[in-house]
Amino acid sequence: MRSLLIIQAILALVGIAVSFYYLGNEGLLPAAFGGAVAIANTILLSRRLESAGEMAQDNPDGGVLSLYLGVIQRFVFVLVMFGVGMGVLKLQPPPMLGVFAIAQLAFMLYGSRKANATKGNTGKRKQ
Image (cartoon, rainbow, N blue to C red):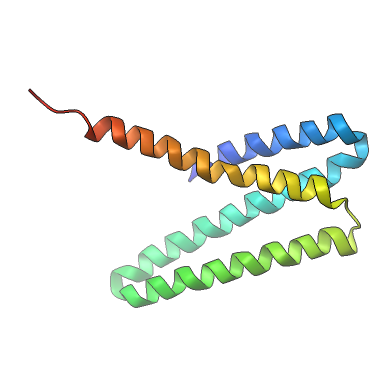
């Protein structure tokens, strides 16, 4: 999970830099907010996966239920944070949503990286 967070932080920093380049100082806070929401969302996922794994050892159905509740929790968290960002803090939506989306690409990059590493290990045969 640490690798995923590192990739996500790098992508968020790239998004913040692009936002600053195009929007100046007005783009920094919304972009940083969007990146922070994405990273916090990943941390919530990590904690939920750990607790569901522990719970699944004793009660497999409880572990699955915990994962479903985690999905709902993270969805509500993201909606509330975007509401706070746009409604309360009056942040510009494009940089906030854009950096959030860019940071979420870390899941795809991390997954493809793991798939390539696994494919390389399982595709070899001893002769």
